[in-house]
Amino acid sequence: MKRFGVVAVAAGLIMAASPAFALDVSKSVTTNAKPAAVWQTIGDFCGIGDWHPAVEKCEESDADGTKRRTLTLAGGGGTLVEDLVSRDDDKMTYTYKIVEGPLPVQNYQSTISVGPNGDGSTISWTGEFDAKGAPDADAEKVIAGIYDAGLNSIAEKAGAM
Image (cartoon, rainbow, N blue to C red; front, side):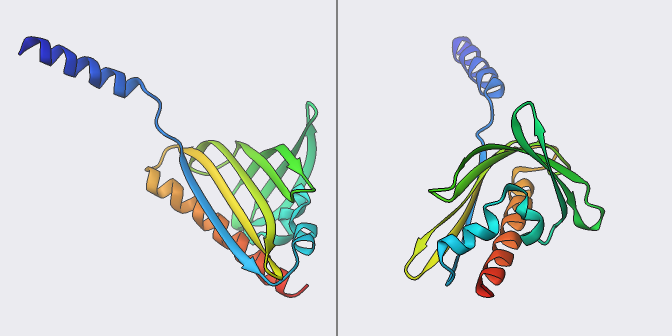
């Protein structure tokens, strides 16, 4: 019995010391606009200021050879600093990470992409992150809301193309 207790305590310590599994959110929207037209709208790394309703302004800079954008959020929501991780214009995709900001996440990395869907396209936005200062469900809800607002705006703008 004593041995079982030691094993249970050791297992508990190992579980407590293990890193938490990353959370992920994936959202997508379809539009009748051709992929190239959608990519022209969203492919510019700092273009997010033109299509995301939560972004008031985007300023691009260079951080030791890495393309960086600083997003001023609407309604006094603060600023987000994000670095471009990778970009592929042929595949119409880019990946970025948050360097700093007010969101309840850390270790955040996300990819936005456009692909063909019949005569139109599908825009996908996926992210992986850990919750910071909030329950997992709350962090997922915040990111899902950001993705939904952005994708809905893209689809609306793409419909006007």
